[in-house]
Length: 275
View 1 (tube, one colour):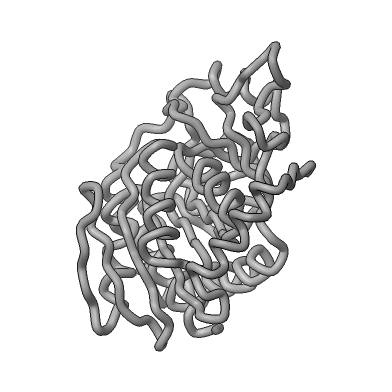
View 2: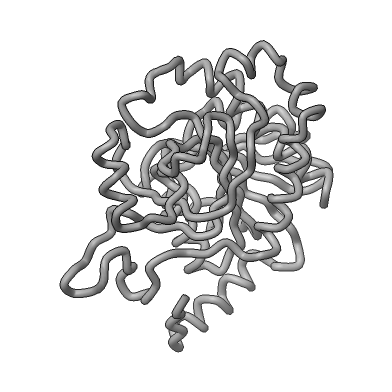
C-alpha cells in the first residue's frame, strides 16, 4: 500500500504514542452483535462498566491483561465511532473485531472462519476524482492486517477448529444442525459496506470487480481505517454464517448463540492464554 506520511500525520502519531503508553498492553474487543461479545464479557475479572455514546464499554482483566469489550452495533459509522472511543477514551494498544459474515467465495462454508488479510470498503467509490475503493486523502484502496497479528490469529484459530477442541466446546449435535463438518480457516480479502448481501446478483457484481473477496460484512474495513490512521494493530475475524444470497435463510439468532458466540469466546480464551 502507498502511505502518505506528511508532517501532520507524524505529529499525530507522536501524540498518540504519548496518550496510550505503548509499553502497556490494553486490548480492545468489538463485536457487531451483543451475542458476539456476551461470552467474552463473562471472561473479565474486576469488571467495570461505562456508558459512552449509547454503548456500554466493559473493562477488566483477562489473564491479567487489561481488556475493554464493547458491542459496536451494525454498520461502518457505528463501528468507526466505537473503535475511536476505544482508542481515545480507553487507550487501547490493539484491537480485535469478531463477528459473522456472508460468504461470497463459493469455497466457503457455514462455520468456516476468515481472518481479514486485506479489507476493502466495497461501497467507497469516488470516481472520477479517484479510483474505485480509494480512501480520500489516504491514497490507499485497502487496509492490511499486520503479519504479527495475522500469524497469531491463524495459530489460535487452527487450534480452535481442530476436531477434538471444537467438539469439546460445541456439542456435535449443534454442529450437525448447522451442517458444519470440518470447518476451515481462510485468510484473505474481506469487503465491508453498509449493504446487506441477500441475492446472487449482488455477489456476482462484487466478484466481477473484486474476484479475490472471500466474504462480506458491514464493519471490518471501517475499523481497519480508524486503526490505520491511529497506528493501532488490529485483527478482523469473521465466522461464516450464511451464503449471502437467496439461500441464506436459517435460524440466524440460533446460529449466533450456538456457534458464532462460542467461536468468539474460545478464540479470546486461546488468545489471552498465548500472551
